[in-house]
Image (cartoon, rainbow over all chains, first blue to last red; front, top):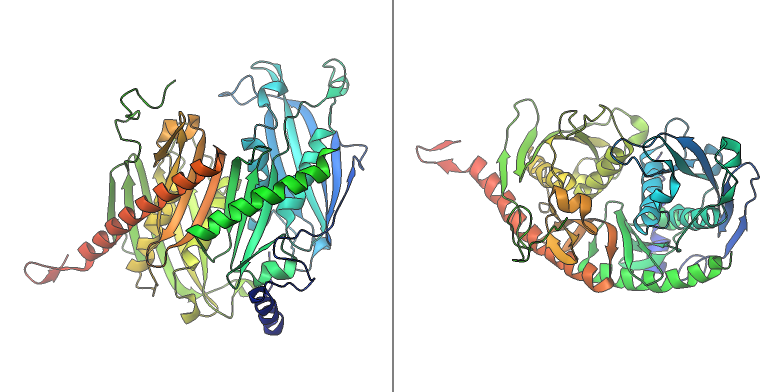
Length: 259
Length: 240
């Protein structure tokens, strides 16, 4: 991925606003953009969701195939998460194999879901040692304005909670609902001029020194954390970030949990 | 299986807040501009630095400073099951976060449009290779004579059998409840690498983070000692 270098005037303006606890789009530092979503827009997928977080627009699809288990986990299915930053979504995105950024997004989204035990891979076993369900979560960003990790995680939650196991198609009995537990939500913030800005836009991400994602569960317990970019956080900033992230995740969870 | 015994000792006999033995050697390769070798418990990790040099890939150049490009790799024979050579999604992610953790302390602004290439080779792995890799890479950058604000030290804390523990071993990494690798700059008190997976309450997260930061201070001393040892003038007036 080509690094987006902001014109100095924009970079300085964002930094100046951050210092005043303000943002270009008039949000508060801990305020999320409008969230819109649609469940199962893709009929061919076992579960899917389209999520718009501000101007970031992405699709998440869940597909299940019958496959062979890993030798060291003969009675467990396989969970895999991929992310593609499509070239249509932003001029800095490039073709070819997934960029470092795409790999990181996929792995951070995956970690929040995996570590919360939202999917019990033992539930994905068909015949121990022989056949298991391979569950693929694929994230496709089609229009980019920052904070893909949070939008993609919400999309994955919606797609998984509304997914069907296509047992009929594989001759493994009747189709049934995918068993899913809980709603682990990721909350991402960036540090700009020593101010923590949640749900960053693309411009805020480009102006940012450092980024932090915190995934929490319904009990506010922490399931995954990832720091990104070349800046740093102090110990007290991490504490503040984790506390605010836990509070914001409750609000986000409420918005999607009805589905 | 129990990871912590009734005596409060761990599978390898360590106390909950005890590091594995760490040994750092500086300047172990002759072609690289800087290099370091770290033995950390059963982990054996080499780091080599080339640069600063011209960034060949023009569009990756940064006009404001050097770009730190890290390649973290696990040798095919480094773990029980052979590792397929070439980048994996795991190694791509680890390379990225180690690079970002180093960029904070390297005075990148002195070398616009340049590239500093860091190669981390895990020869033998036994939990905690990204921390050992970052610790080694940081010393290797210093050995290359690249101006730095401080060294980054790195160590993980985590949770096993309900206890907060320091520097997870292999069993604790595989069967424990949480892993929290930290990269820390003691001079400024800044955290430049932070990841977590597993399950911890807010309070557990806080004590694990504090434990890891404390250990980074200790590792920072080992790093400094290794560098001093490499460049000190020893008896007889010769550098070793």
